[in-house]
Length: 130
Image (cartoon, helix red, strand yellow):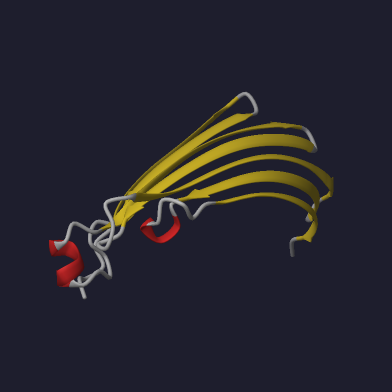
């Protein structure tokens, strides 16, 4: 099994209530067997970007993520794409109400061209932070 070898970069910048963040991660050959690496497998890479806006107690955000992985047993790339939208309201210090809507597309699961999965999720959160 190959050793953990990850390259990750990320950053965030904020101005006038807006925050923009992005990240990239390459897993190289992490946790793959030598046979899988020789066959052309890649543990994958992922990148994402998000934008948020905060005005007083209200906040909104949108984000996008894309990840790819190549299995040793297939020349087909497995891909995951996620996109989300969120809104939040700070009721009081340490008390946050939040709603999030997310869309997911998982294509070629396990390197099989006909194995796809799409989904949607909606989450309501009542968060207390101590």
